[in-house]
Amino acid sequence: MSSSAPRRELNPWYIAVVAGMASYLDAAVIVSTGTSLVLYEDPLGLTGDEIGVLSFALTLGLAIGSVTGGRLGDRFGRKPVFGVTMLGIAVAMALNVCATGFPMLLAGAILGGLSSGADLPVSIATIAEAANDENRGKMVSFSQVLWTVGIVIPLVLAVAFGGLDRLGGQISFGHIGVIALLVLACRVGLPESPVWLAARAERQREGGAARTERVPIRALLKGTYAVPFVCLLLFYPLVNLAGNTSGQFGTYLWVNVADSTVEFSSLIGLIGLTLALLFAVLFMRVVDTRYRMPVFYAGAACYVLSHLTPTVFGVSAATLAVWQLLLAIANSIAFEAVFKVWAQESFPTLLRATAQGTIIAVARLLAAVLALVTPRLAAAGPQGLFAMLTALVVIGMAAAIIGFRNHTNNEFPTHANPTEPARAH
View 1 (cartoon, one colour):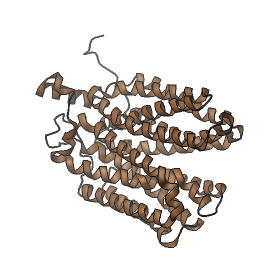
View 2 (cartoon, one colour; view 1 turned 60 degrees about the vertical axis):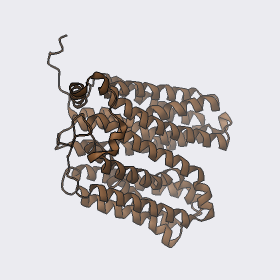
View 3 (spheres, one colour; view 1 turned 90 degrees about the horizontal axis):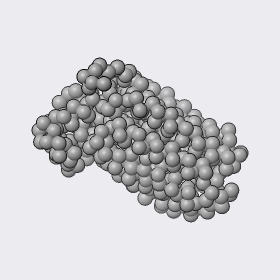
View 4 (cartoon, helix red, strand yellow; view 1 turned 45 degrees about the vertical axis):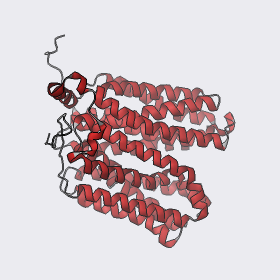
């Protein structure tokens, strides 16, 4: 067929769903690993140290995958990364389902982390490049809704099948593999991002095909991109340390510090997820309007107050409930979703996924390091742990406000040359 033949235009929201499933799978891989390894513990004879190594391997794989996948997506296109990552997730889940011991689970954790991490920055870039100035923020922040659903479904599966021991874990891992294959089938029909193709063509005209493949990462630290890159590099990783502590150690703090129960902790978590989903939908409605920053300021205040409450009043069931419920609201309107939107609006096409992948990688590496010492910090003094997290949140939020307080919604640099000033899409 001739290259000039007309091609059917896909609905941008279809692209947002198919590409945005990266957020669902990212959350599902993390949550399912946490619950399924507990179900595998006795049947496969896993030790606590081995479970710790598997969790660390997954987190490290996510970090390495984020920076590698982002760079590959900018150099070689969005679509090639799509296929490899979905296939990698499917294979990783097959290894986890069939695992007979630690070695296969380790291989699954590494491959699953690398694949899921690589897919996320490329998928968000694809969504942004399929959108227009009127709906870009909505479409990018929709991935936060999918990310929340990616937490809910594995938890529902754990409740429904947790009593089946290893089989329950296999069901949780297996559902991710099946979804990855379905997403892969849908992505086959997606065209390459026209914005990326145009940027590559522009770069080729400027300097030849060889230079097209080597847009330098150091360009992120120069000119108009330095301020948003540095601010996001402070905002997302530092705030993520607080959010990740809630996700990984919330139940631990409820049971071992507040003398509460897993059941009550799960109830608060379910209420929090409901709030998170509602506020994620709310953020979609305001993200492309002049209310984006006022809503962000409210969310930032909730984030600080959520950690300040246990710091000031001590760690108890009441203060942990305030912590997690305020955090659920704040996460939806002042963290992941707005980071993704700012990341798309701040960088040129051939560095967009690279920038986001690098920032996510730093966030996950720092989270992995903090996770190794969090139980010791909590044992030494839980109020000290929350005071540290409060300080990190304040610094991260201040960086975001400094970098984006005067940011104009829908600024979207599409040019190839990262040394040129940004211009609207």
